[in-house]
Each structure stands twice: as C-alpha cells, then as structure tokens.
Image 1: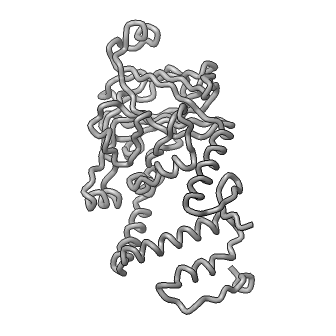
Image 2 (image 1 turned 60 degrees about the vertical axis):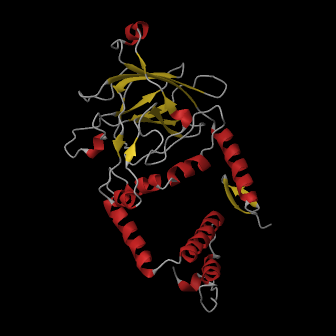
Image 3 (image 1 turned 30 degrees about the vertical axis):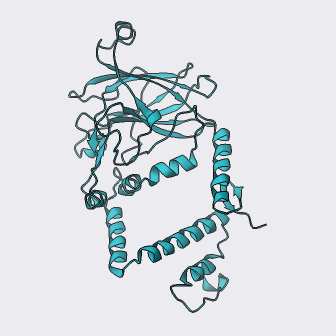
Length: 329
C-alpha cells in the first residue's frame, strides 16, 4: 500500500512492556471494525501467550516451521489445517459459537478434513457405499423444524469411510466418489439410503498433526460415525454426525467431535422394515430424526450468547452483520 495514503501513527520506544500497545496503535487505522476487533484481540492474546510461557527463539522458530509444514501437507483432498484445528478442539468451539442450537434441535459437530464436492446426487433409497467388505446398513431419517413440521427439499450431504476406515479421496487409484452422496428431503421431510456400518479409524497421522499427537502422547482414533450436512435457504447451516453407541473411542475422540445427543444405537432390521425397504432382515438399521433451526432463530441466539459472554469479560459490544464489535459510542 502506498505509504503516502496511510495515516502515520508514531511508535514509542519499543520494549517487552509496550510492544503490544505499539502494534495495536499501528493497526488502529483499519477501516473494518470487525477485522480491527479480531486483530486487536489476536495480537493481545498472542503477545500475552509469549510472555506467559516465556517463549524462546528456538520454540518460536519451531512453531513457524510446524505451520509451514502443515500448509505443505495440504492438498485438494486433504486439509491438514482443518485436522489441526479439529485436534486442538477449535473446530468444535467455533461451530458452537457460530451455530448455537436450542435444546430441542440437532447439535453440530466438526466437518473434518475429508468432505469433498464430488458427491453424486441420488434419490432416496439408493446405495451410496459399494464396499463389498462393509456390513450393509439401512439409514432412515426425518428432517423437521422445532415444532415438528417436516422440512422439504433440504440438500443433505452425507459421507463416511469404507470398512477399512478410509475415505474415498484417500485412495490414489479411485475411479470416482464412493461412500458419499447428496440427497433431498421429501415432502414429509424424509430421506433414506443404504450404506455400510461405520467403523472406527485413525485420522491421518503421517503429517504435522500426527507428530503433534505423538509428542502429546495422544492417540489418533475416531469413533465410528457418519457425517451429515444440511443446507436450505432460510435455515441455519448444520454440519453434524451420528456416532455409533458403545464404540471404544466414544469418549476419547481425537478431534473432540462426539456429543451425547449425537450418539445413536443401531438395531437389527425387523421383518416389517425388511419388506418395506427391501433390506435383509437382521442387518443393522440406523434411525434418526434431525431438527433444524431457522437462520433468524440462530442469529438471535448467537447474538444473545455473544453479548452475555463478552459482558462477562467486561466488554460492551454492538452487532454489525450479526458479529460483535466494541461499542465505543
């Protein structure tokens, strides 16, 4: 940017005591109030962190090299930074802040690093997973609002691993998408499909995130689950998953994705269901009723929770575009 067009903010003689104040003064010309607020808090917390742990130059460089290597590990089908965010609990925290849910609605969870935009559109009743080694699973779901009214024509993105715990995009020789699809809810809010029973699996640990977990003496396992993402204009975007009950990693998920309300039980297919859905009797069935929240309901709840949280920290705020900024008027 042309220096002649920048308002000059003189810096004080720099020291460990005033470096934070100096950076905030230089950044104070930012015309975007939300970006200015974010950068102010980021710089403050970042500097306080360095002071608190007495960060060494060697550790600082190791951190920079770690982030560089994390970026180098990313590809079109693998997002190592999302994986890092997941394993630090940040992904779940951000989702909970940005998409708060009333008590009677479906809770959100992590997106994960292996969602793709290659999924095929399928009508209800189709088979989305074709792994011959996987145990057949029938999934029957409904989609309603908080009052119990069906929601029609919602786009539903669904994905899971194969029986070996790998997503389709993890195979270099794959011929196309598998274990994933996109459906639409019908007039009764229903959708159903055939898949395979989810299995627990390790997140990729051949990169920087895996190295971090080993240094922290943490395992890389995720409990068995299936991902769902719901999208329709006027409704709050929902990214969630269903977790199979009694999985050995249910209470130690490497990416902090499990919530009690998202844990579900599989039941053997009875004779009536087998006949109705042309599915083998005795094989597992997953049934679940999803509940969406309107964009307006979510916005009001997000603003309320944000106001309450920031007031506890002594901050008076106002909202611009649904996001808080300092109220200095």
